[in-house]
Length: 198
Image 1 (cartoon, rainbow, N blue to C red):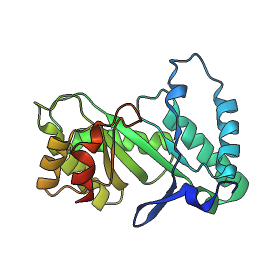
Image 2: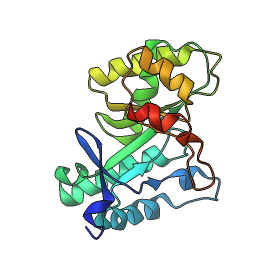
Image 3: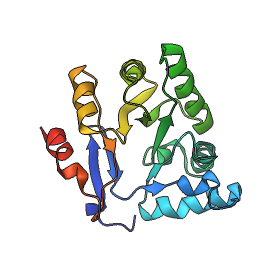
């Protein structure tokens, strides 16, 4: 590994990740066609240099399929223990509506199948419409699937602080919330950072 030790971060009690995530939005097709074989081949040098954490989503085109193929090739070439140093964080972006156990589990099963794994390292849940509080049902079912071993950790993307408080108030354990934050957009510092620290 070429990255310094400071590049590692204790994300959860049982998971250390690279502080710099490899975003796979580019393979979604918005930037033109990609060569899947070349994309998978190019993933090896990233991991070899220490960039072991991948950020993908169910709607990033073939991103989950590419991770699945990368896992197969990596374990074939280097053994199953090589995959243990890689983290693949996916997202589930669904439309608002009833969130039954069947709907939620089907989405998780699709990602598991595409990624060719038995358990998702992290499932980041994204919701479009706060007026529809079915997101609480979805997160409850995701928590059950975590407890049953299909998901290692449940997380969020783009939830505001008010909704984070509601989720926490329902006893749902969330390990992260991926939001916009930069030198220009520092909104999470207003309330969210303190709430997460508390």
